[in-house]
Image (cartoon, rainbow over all chains, first blue to last red; front, side, top):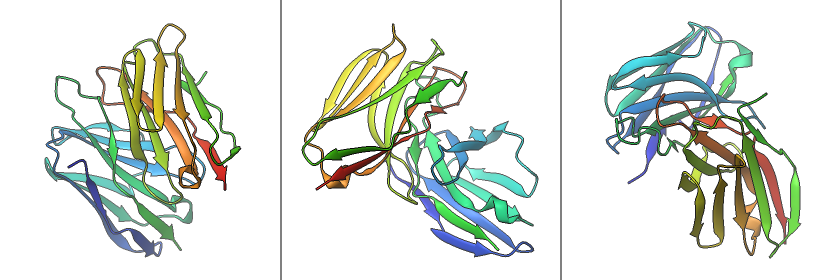
Length: 116
Length: 111
């Protein structure tokens, strides 16, 4: 099973709303990622968790708050977003283990977020 | 200079053609090389994976890595309309939890 599951698939929110994106994998991967992707652009790294600890934060605004409750789950909490934050948000995972940590990166199907 | 360069296209070919997609890179530490297929508004799907140099074949798809030239390729034989998508190359080093992406090439296969 090489599946990364993301919910919801679509989300529309106002600028004052609070919402959360959820991601789950059962491949035993120890590195999990959030990416943001705008149309016709490659994915842009936001956060990396390694062994449930935040290891990379690419200077993302504080209105995005990641959380890794356990080795299989990753959340992205959203608050007071701006219209320019509208994008496809992708969760991904890789082995993250000492042997071949970056061997392959598997993506979920994404959450298409629209901020009104 | 970007870590990974990829011709954005767009590329348009007739059904049955052989398609060649390419990426170049600058970091000699890259060891893992991936090709993704992405349909509009969907997550990227891992299509091919290669470790270090060499070729890998899977059905109609062949991935090649030439580390001496820092050049990777994806060939699609007997292209089908269902191959119409954006193709992203990606690569990583052994350590660091970082993956580096090309800008993607948009491919259209015309029936």
